[in-house]
Length: 561
Image 1 (cartoon, helix red, strand yellow):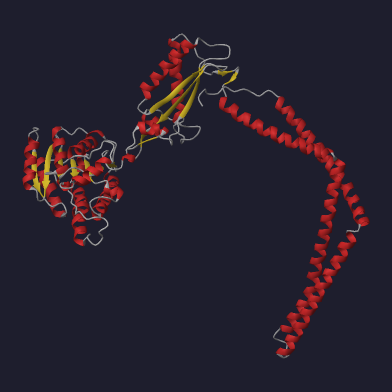
Image 2 (cartoon, rainbow, N blue to C red):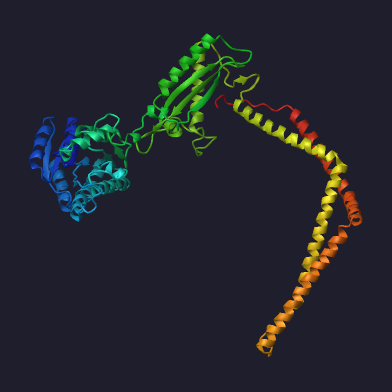
């Protein structure tokens, strides 16, 4: 946004951050409307300083916590200037109450803080919304890092700033696309609010990377940048870099040092087994290529290291890099697709969604390959667009996968050979199987006898019990109980008889001569089955061996991994 000649309203513009913003925008040629509620003297002093930049400035008294006064002030500005393009909600209030002093946080403190910080912000935004839509304007809400951390001058203040951040995000959706709404959330700022708290300020400064806290001019610079140079930013909570949470202020250097950063690796082939040039020339080509990549893409692609491998079958380059881009919070983060999109790279198939086979890294790799070809040509070296590796298509990653597959196949074949050896010993195997099978058959027979005996005989007794216990029987309670007791005794005798029968069956079936006869019958049945299995397994092994020896169809692949 070109802010020269625009009109900006700054609430609380007579002091502190509001004054700093007024002066910074005036310096860029913006006409200023200074709002105050109590600081009249300071407001007019600010007016004089603003007018020194050669722009127009008017002062408006209004309590922004009162809806009617907000609307009246906007009407007055339109009458005086004919337009309103920028609204900066800087007016704010707090009461210093230690967070642990719960009783000290009085109800009237809550009301006082929320009336101005929350209701005042909303009332002003609402009053100016229609005017700002017409001018495609900007709203900047001065919030606080306290709204994110829950820290700050009091619990009520932190809560009010959290609410203000929420209002910022909500209004960004409501007023889009005509109006951008942005929150600026500083840490502690050197204003009259913190006078007399030098020890506290020094402590907070010690926790920041720059060992200092922000002043009004620092915040004003951020506000100016967001208004004039961030046309794509809305709904954001822009945190001041000089806050008490340096871990949130990531730069590219921090990213590259982080153990959590996973670099990308690309391999470029620049020779073949039988055709390559002197190492000195290759070094010149690689060095120049890396310089060009850094020059063109260095804003989002950061080369960590590279190596020229000359001691293998084919000369090639290993290069490691990191993609980075700002995330939704304005922080630097490793983001491949977003970084490449910012550099202007399109998807190979734009109509299809991003995926493993359709991503901007593929387009980036192709562009880098073309750059390498161009550099090589300058040095008299013609590279093949589809490079070969050791006389085969360059399939380093695929070959690694095949190697692992061959390892697994070899292990499986070893197990199969062991099984084959065991199968070939048919007689021993049949003896083992037959013996086990006969024992299992005896177990099944006895279980079946047990089940059938229990099911048929017990069923009859249970039916008799049901008949005795039915309401139609007119016998006395004593007689019924006696009959039931006798029937239960019958069930017990049946069960004992069943156990005895099963024992006799098992004894008979396990007699050596009976078991031997049964086992021989099983052997005859099993032997033919095992021989069939052996024959089938041998055939499978032979077919697999034939398929392994057949030449595979080669397919040229991309050189990038």
